[in-house]
Amino acid sequence: MQRKILLLFACISLIGAARPSFAADEYAAASVNEEGGIFFAWANTEAGAQEQAVSACERVSKTCNRDPGVTNELNDVFAYMCCRSPNYSCAASPHETKSKAEEVVRSVLSDFTRCSIVGYYSARTGRKE
Image (cartoon, rainbow, N blue to C red; front, side, top):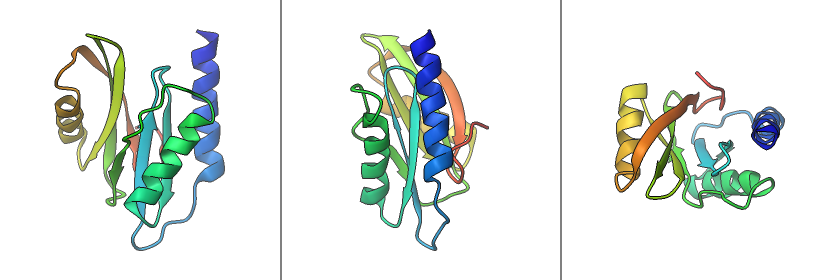
């Protein structure tokens, strides 16, 4: 339990420290790990945002999702979901509403069961909504 709290604190710290100002063509990406952490990054390209999100996650974990959710619509929200069967797996997917984001992340994790939403996060700030 302490490890999860420390990882969550690390995630929040990274969000605050690495948050850039937005350019016209800004992308937000969110990588997740199996310890319950979500890691955000922003860049001028989709690939750049994804790479930076994975890199932020890998600084504290070896169980990072190497295919993070990404959007160039900063008003979107990321739905972060974890499933427990057939094995533990998590993903984060963006969309313009919480319900649509949840639909998308459920489709990403369609081969899994016993799933639940961990939280919803702003693409603009990375903060929990």
